[in-house]
Length: 303
Image (cartoon, rainbow, N blue to C red; front, top):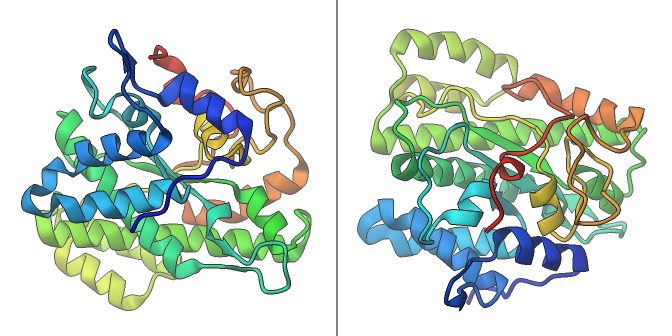
């Protein structure tokens, strides 16, 4: 049985109701947040045919645990009467804080295996979304990133300026890279790869430099990958607010009210320690880490 989503911050309820809750002329269509999850998951899983119920359960389980959140445009429009005309640069985020077991205790630890599996699920989610809502030829650059990074450090008992925090940040980035690569290789083995053998050989140098397991590199060379660029850390203040107001990894300071989205010029505060964490992650992130700007949802009209 899937768990019921728990809100623990009023800002998250306001974020969902204002930005992601489906309503139309007949009234409210998403009666609660779980209805939003099921709406989005069912819309994305239609690609799977008879296997769609399995993917739906995986997606809803990740959503309701706040461990994975899809592109803002998918949360707003997937499964509604509003069509997504063209999904360019699709994004998803993993909430690192949701992968810390026994938080704020001496037994706190980062669940790297679950994190990597969820990263692979994010690739699957976005590949399906591209099939449904994009006319672009593969490979397409995906933007799978993180939120809740500084929350996770607090749960683990690591001061942001500590060496231990930077080591955790590197581990998180490496797990993100490996999980996304595994997801991309698995999909390539099932759906085919648009990447040529010569391009795979060039990419293999990057994978080995990042410390990816040799068996995974061998699989990627044999089966190919669906997408050559998978990871990007960029501002997603609305997703961070929705996920019980965790810190946005690219703009780590929380905003004082949910009504005030990230200013276009950058975060309200950005400490050197937080910047050092992101710098420690950069070698495993495909796109340059961005710490200012606005998310795609802020460009879209509110429902």
